[in-house]
Structure formats: C-alpha cells, structure tokens
Amino acid sequence: MAQGERSEIAQKSLSSQMPDSRWVALFWITLAELLVMSVWFSASAVVPALEQAWHVSGSAVVWLTSAVQLGFVIGALTSAIFGLSDRIRPRILMGWGALGAGLCTAAILLFPDGGPWPFLLRGLTGAFLAVVYPVAVQWVSTWFPQKRGLAVGILIGGLTVGSALPHLLTGLPLLQNWQGVMGGSAVLAGVSWALILWVVPENPIPFSAPVFRWNSVGAVLRNRPVMLANLGYWGHMWELYAMWTWLPGFLLASWAPTLPRLDIGQLVGWASFAAIGLTGVLGALVGGWLADHFGRTAATTVALLVSGAMSLVVGLTFRHGIWLTLLIVLIWGFSVIADSAQFSAAVTELSPVSQQGSALTIQMAVGFLITIASINLVGVTEPVLGWSHVFLLLAVGPLVGIVAMVRLRSRPESTKMANGRR
Image (cartoon, rainbow, N blue to C red):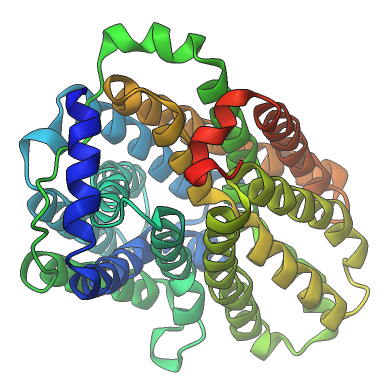
C-alpha cells in the first residue's frame, strides 16, 4: 500500500474519533479566514473616495485589486516552490500571513495622497494572503477526510463574507471614509492573527501539505481529468473576481439617478455586502452539500449555468428597477461562489498523491492570473459597451467551465470524486 493511501486511511480513522473537535476547529479557522480576507477588497470598496483623494482614474485605482491578485500568484508560487507549508506549521504560517496582510493594509494610511507605494503594499498584501487561504484549505482538509466538500464549502463561505466585509464597513457612520474602511479591515486581520495563533485547537493528525514539484508539472498537464477540473476552475475564476470587483460600480451607476445621492454610497455598500457576502456564504454551503450528495460535476455544472445566466441578464436590469436588479445580483452572488471549493477538492481526488501539490499550485496560479485579465477587461470595455452590456463578457467563463465539467463527468475517472458521486 502506498504511503499516501496509508496516510489517508489513518486520517479517516483518527477523524472518526474526534467529531466534536473538528467542528470547533472549522469554526475558528473559518472565522479567522473571514476576518483576514476583509483586506482583499478593502480598496475596491472605496474606489470613488480614492479617485478623489489620490486624483487618479477608476481604471488606475482598480489596479489596487489587480495588484493583490498578482501578489497572491507570486506568493503562492514562492510558497509552493520552497515548500513553506511543508516546512512551517500551518498555525504559524497562516497566522503570520494574516498579520502581514493587516500591516500592509494599515501602512497604506501613511500615504493619504496616493503614489506608487500603495500599489506595492497591495501586492505585498496579496503575497501574505497566499499563505493564508491555501493553507486554511489544506488545514481544514486534514480535519475532514470525509465530508470534505461541506467543510471546505463552509471555509469558502467565510472567505466570501470576509471579502464582502469592506462593503459593509462603508455603511457604518464611523467608517464612511476610505481611511476608516482600510484601517478597520487591517484591525480585523490583526484579530485573525490572534485567533489563529492562540484559539484554533491543535489537530492530532500530522499535517503534511501536498508539495509542488517541477518534475510533476508535465504529468499534471497530461492528466486529462485533472486538467478538465482545472479548466472548470479557470472558467469560474474568469467570472468570480470581476463580478466581485465591479458589482458596486454597476449598482452605483444604476441606482444613482433615482436615489438620493446622500444615501447612495451606504445603500450600494449594504447591497454589495448582501450579494457578495450573505448570499455568497449560503451558496458556498449549499454547493458543498450538493457536491457531497450528488457529485462534484453535477453541483458545479448547475452553479456555472445559473451564474452564467445571471451575467447575461443582469445588464438588462440597468436603471430598470432597483428591486429587480437587487434580486438578480443576489442570485448571481449565490451561484457564482457555490462551485468554488469543489474544483480544488476534485483535483485532490483525481491526482496521485505525489502530484497533488503541483496540480493545486497550477490551478490556483493560473486561476488568479486569469482574474487580472477579466477584472481589467471589464474596466477597459465598460466605457465602450456600457454597464448594460459589459457583464456579457463574463459569461464566457461559465460556458467554458460547463463544457469541461460535462466532459469530466463522461470519463470513468470521475467516479473517484465525492466517494463515487460524479
């Protein structure tokens, strides 16, 4: 029996003996992830204020988000190549990553007039987050060799709420300026650091993260089932972060002519938090449950179909009724994240143990590079196509993902996923 198989059997045996502690661990890890991820979109939530304070265009400010994506990719590759998650305990790596992301976000307050340094700090923020989110997924996975889809779905739900938190902060009276939102996000990241280091319980199962190996890259690229799962993820990522980044701008442009300008910023903040965070966490939970019970390809295909449909129709609601627009973006927020965790879970199930680290690294690095392209494509083409048509571009991602999932489902290897449920 291979060493990886023996380790998996040992994990299942130990996890069955600690049903209570693993749910406690999941709660605290998810809460810590929720808090630290608030720094990711802390700049996107206050783009109008930054445009005025720094005297820059919206297309320039959006690079405050793209810089995080690029920093995340560089950080993830660096961590994988040097095997940081295999050399450093997850508690230490994730904890200090959270603190670093918080400190980089707080440091932007030292530059009230903007300049190049905030963009560099945002890139460093993404690099620190690269040892938070992936480590959290791997950490939770060791606690849940069974019911992994639901557990990782809960974690992704926390990530989703955390990513939406800055939009909620913009609606609080004490934080209705860009310094308050970014400073508040930095404080939340500091709380996350404390939770990770001193509150999350220890896992009795030895943690050994999948290791990235250059000599495994070719084998991963030739593994058709794994690459189909990756293709589904990349289609999902094309849509996800562009939707999260530009939704507030869409709502502001749609609602501003018909609502009192005094309240519009607060209303857009609350609506964005509801669409990205509240319905998003429900989508992540439902997606995880559906994947565990009906199969990963079935759950991801449905989620991609619904989210792709919403990207096609949301533009039709532009300035045609506040409640209709809100309904569509709530459905969009629910479905756009429902499949996210399942692509990573599928790769771990379809890959040999020796290739899992390389497969996950390729999946994540390419996925976040794709988000830079889609985020900036929406920003560049919106003045040409208008808000009523620009989100049509995002439907390409779900279409590619659906084709990949249908093909994966038709392959015999798909029975390796979700305990035989395709």
